[in-house]
Amino acid sequence: MGRFLNPDNSAFQVALNSEIYVDKTGLLKYTNKVLNTTQKFICNSRPRRFGKSITADMLTAYYSRGCDSEEMFAELAIGQSENFQKHLNKYDVIYLDVQWCMMDAGAPEDAVAYINEHLIAELKEIYPQVALNQVKTAYGALSMINAAAGSKFVVIIDEWDVLIRDEAANQAVQDAYINFLRGMFKGSEPTKFIQLAYLTGILPIKKIKTQSALNNFDEFSMLDASSLAPYIGFTEEEVRELCVRYHKDFEKVKRWYDGYLLEEYQVYNPRAVVNVMMKGKFRSYWSETGTYEAIVPLINRNFDGLKTAVIEMLSGSSVKVNVRSFQNDAVSFSNKDDVLTYLIHLGYLGYNQDNQMAFIPNEEIRQELTAATESKKWDELMTFQQESFALLDATLNMDEYAVAEGIEKIHMEYASVIQYNNENSLSSVLTIAYLSAMQYYFKPIRELPTGRGFADFVFIPKPEYIQDYPALVAELKWNQNAKTALQQIKDKKYPESIEQYSGDILLIGISYDKKSKVHQCKIEKCLV
View 1 (cartoon, rainbow, N blue to C red):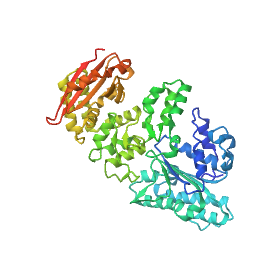
View 2: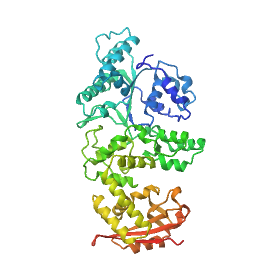
View 3: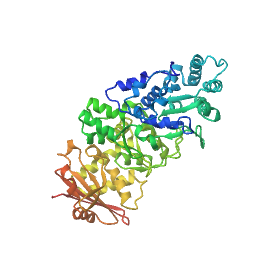
View 4: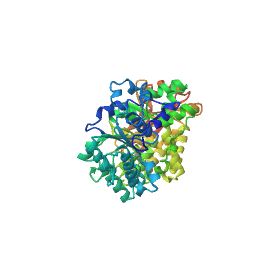
């Protein structure tokens, strides 16, 4: 039993000792299935505080021959599996936390040499019969051991991408590390000595030019989690169970911490959920994740449409994003899509794989992004927020002319990248214009089924503001007039389904005339 080779199960035991532990051992059914197959190379990336290290510790505790973990796993999901005993503590496991190794090495430039030196030293102790004195690389030692003794290894690397992210500008460190990973996992020889490889970090595998350095890895990420989706974060079912146990309002927890869409699963940030269960306070726990400082420099990049996209998402809408060009590092940004894709991997944005849209997943992240832009003086947003607050005030005061003028101004100055051509593009501008409403209202509901049809926008006030702010029901019309929009709200009885949320309701009709390029607005109080 060593530090890196065949470690014990004590790290995973710490997770099990915790008051809240959500069983994710079902992941082991998948890894057991792919052992010693072409699918045995796995990169499972996810944001900070999404359980990366606990998962790595779980895999180590299950496979490592350096411990006896039968009792630990017997009552968990994997313990009910038919092949539970077959793979339990049967393998030589190498576990590396690259962040820790880099720090203990003293400098990023020394990280690879440190790993090679210490891992070879431990391999010599376990395999004294194999002549390793002249070997300089860990993968060279593994190859020789496999040739001499037939042994295969399970390799688990936590924070695999830390050198890619933190040393993005240091080409020498990058090259040395990528070459180390190639030696460990790429080509015919590693196929012989690797039983399973599991890499976890924030980023998927680094791309070099047009070809991945490790294109034999299967990727499971926030863009495409595939069959591992239920093991990335907490699922809705798991959060419901915790809410029952800790007597929390599930709907409130959902508004604050839900929103990551992975396959058919709604996924929650585990750290945030655990904190709200234990502490009882609904607030953002995200700033403790360590990537807070990265946000404003990213969104301040001078890419067409980037700032409009961020403001649009802050306002509750989704934006189209092409995730294919991102190079999986922290420096190679060539357009707004690369920045948005990076923010998806960091967890600041959610992603809908079906429609290829990015969005802010929940109230926690919306507050965090807003706070980041305010603290770092993102001047465009601060000025825009002032105008958005003025627009909200004009709406609440039923100043129709000021509302029309305010929407037009915001479209011209902040959302000009959105070219009007239908009611949907008009709705995008309206979403941006009412960003300030997010302080007092929930995320606007698009196409809410109400009465005899679907209202274009419904803003429902948060419980603490119900007495001071009315619900807003808005209908948009393209190349028609605002009176028509307002009449449709009445004719189709849109307000009926939201009366339970607020005593007061404002009906808002907004139109845009393509020829005159003028917005119109009509506002009435609901007299139901």
